[in-house]
Image (cartoon, rainbow, N blue to C red; front, side, top):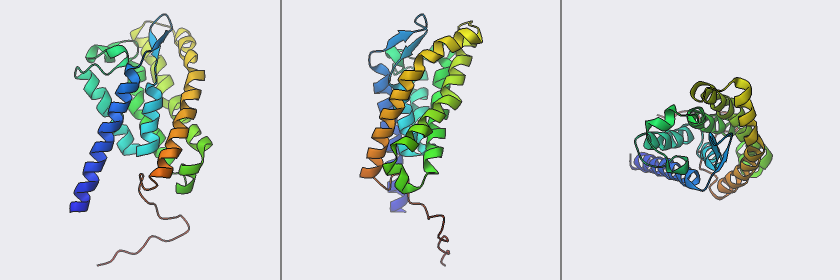
Amino acid sequence: MSSRRASTSTDIALIAGFAALIAACALLPAIQVGAGLVPITLQTFAVLLAGAVLGARRGFLAVLLYVVVGAAGLPVFSGGAAGLAVLTGPTAGYIVGFPLAAGLCGFLVERLPRHKIATSIPLIFVCGLASSAVFIHPLGMAGLVLRADLTWQEAFDIDKLFWIGDAIKNLAMALVATAVHRAFPDLLGRRTPDHQPAPAPTA
């Protein structure tokens, strides 16, 4: 019972810590692109790092906590913005995509061989890039179309301004994530190797 309680406390601390990291990255000075509609920040670096380091469930919850705290009124969104109005603005799609991308990144990383997680920067990089491509960019463009009254072509023209920066941030994320997993090899929990049978339950 005590070990389970300790594990839960650790999970809560990690989730809260990564939510705070995302907020810190969002509050750093941003570069405005697309007629000032969307800022370039380090949010995506922290969002995908949460998934790559914590795994699907905890990574998703960390980013969701960040979004909920911002929606509740704390100034943790880009530029110190806060409140539900941000979630109805032109950047809403990107914000909605953040927890989903963190969850997918964690899901993909969890399925890598454990020794690869700590050593393969390219694999972690691909996991982050794929997660951005599946959720952040499509939902971000959808938000621009719905909330900024842009055409899909106009939204695409804005979104593509992020691609090079996102590739660089994903590379940095992969470097940090592999370093973290080398330092804390059990952070995602141990997994029974595929070629070995799982131990039989004992009475």
